[in-house]
Image (tube, rainbow, N blue to C red; front, side, top):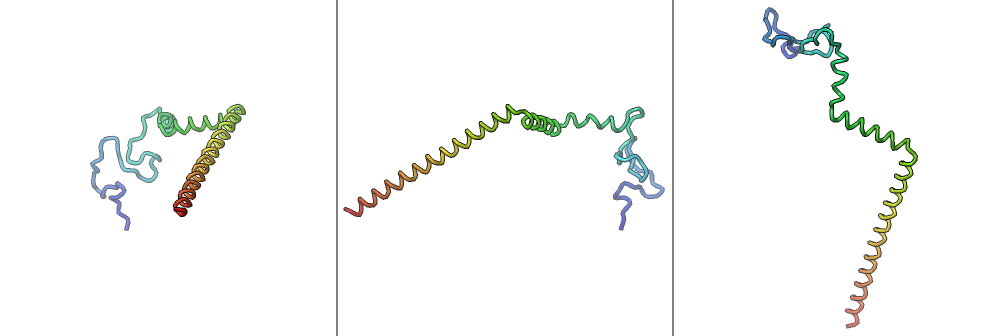
Amino acid sequence: MHDPHRYGYPPTGHTPPYPQGYAPWHPGSAPGFHGQAAPPPGRPVAAATATSHLTNARFLKGALFGALAAYLLTNETVQQNAIKTAVRAWSMVQGGVEEVKERFRDAEAELHAAHSQDDED
């Protein structure tokens, strides 16, 4: 069942205790001003909210990241340097893996040598 009080509608014949300048939203009222006073005359709604995202930290981070990505994707010198760096890093990883494998082989050989020496005694 629909409860009119849930949505801020006062009971019939009752004066609502809303602060001055605030009123419940009613069908046909300006969109975006649910329970709030209308903006001052002479200041369009779009202009009031158009610059609010410029101070939002998430927006600024996203814009900076997007600009950086566009720069990286369109600059050939940056692309070549990024690829060279990635190749160097991959080579270092592979070299590190080979070094670890060699150490395991050495440790395995020492264990076999120690085990065969124990069998001879």
